Image 1 (cartoon, rainbow, N blue to C red):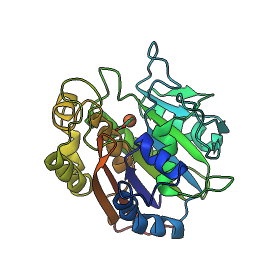
Image 2 (image 1 turned 90 degrees about the vertical axis):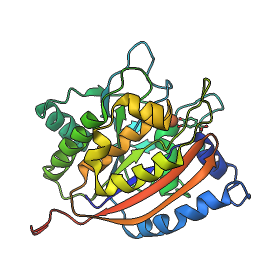
Image 3 (image 1 turned 30 degrees about the horizontal axis):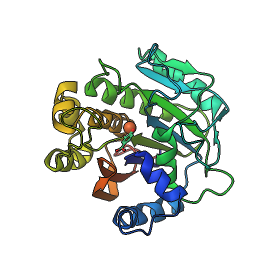
Length: 285
Ligand code: DHB
Ligand code: FE
């Protein structure tokens, strides 16, 4: 595992890139904040990315919502979310790695739904655009989509997401092939899209979370779903997906870059990039 990236997935961040608006005064501060992370990631290219994200009722019907899922396909189409498909490359899968992860996680007592066919929505494609703004005909690497239900009550606990990440990390490290892996944790930060508190932003909570995701993930894992919804908003609970990414990283990490900007659409948007330096005291072969 070479790095972990936490990033918001607001659809309009993708639309700003698709419609060449990144230099507009509204968007420029956000994209300027991404620049150092993008430069570093371009120099540290993974062979495969595991993107922990949530579908927003585009591919997953609300009649049947798995708590955790993994895509096992060799190809994922870009979802049409109502405005036509984003003009970004299709997502190439890594089915052998998917199969390994599903088996290892099942053996670690995580009951994972498998998606043999999946149209990926902004929850996955916007983070890929944050990583790679100009992919040309193809994204820089294949992707394993990992889905977490954050939209239908009761969502998994933050503690369960952190434990899933730890099991994911063990599964990645036990993969017999020599591949460089990056893990994305997506969504957040504080936001609420509907109801009386629509537009909620909580900078104090976000600042605490941005710090603790590096230094004290256990503190974040101890928060209840109600804590997340109260403090970060009904959609701010997406932040539990950052804990899957953080759990997968070793304890020996370095913060490469972070940035926080309000507003991007209705959200507080952030990015945090961590280099994984490997297990302390052991030789990483
Ligand atoms: C917005 C944010 C999201 O996380 C999302 O999934 C959809 C929309 C927004 O702020 O517009
Ligand atoms: Fe979302």
